[in-house]
Image 1 (cartoon, rainbow, N blue to C red):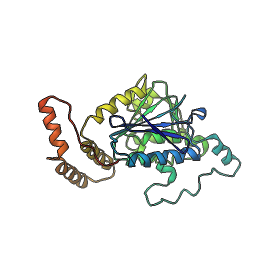
Image 2 (cartoon, rainbow, N blue to C red):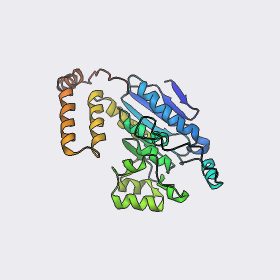
Image 3 (cartoon, rainbow, N blue to C red):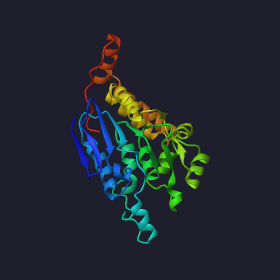
Length: 275
């Protein structure tokens, strides 16, 4: 299995049985977010989008942690009054998200499911990257935090639209205001983490393989609908359901799914377009 290193920070594997792994690869700094890591995550998302044969993405961190958040050098620059080397945050670059927000939001926009395996810590921006995934696995003792208030900041890497899908309003406010640290177990109870596992990567890979065995067209249609759930009104969402189902019924992969089920065999699906 070949790998591509994006901006020296993020490793992307070639698809294997439809599964691509994306690894944050700055273990000596607990995968902290410096400008190169921002570039690497954005480059990795665009690389995966261009790949053929991708059905699921699994994201994880090398070394002791998933991601410790913004690099300390950026905070030191803020403390000196020089500010971080992040440029102007206002431009949208032709999308709804600025460059910092794309680090998390691009994974939400990707047409295939993205699963995150979290261990060690996921603080601040690191947590927001993980929230860009469709599902998250963490160890019971993983430490997670909406940490920005500690540094006089607010979550601004798509954290707000991503957290509102997962948390009650009062819980979201508490975590944003206090920046307190949660264990993986508490994060799962609150909704930030999908499952607690002794080996998050193995657990995420097992589910990724299961998803990859389903019709890629049906899975992508499901993600498109789910991505609309918190923004579309009921009428628009009902119509979107109908459009997706009409497109699927009688299609080659839908017919193959039915035949394989009736014949009690593994289906042989045709690949969808690049992600």
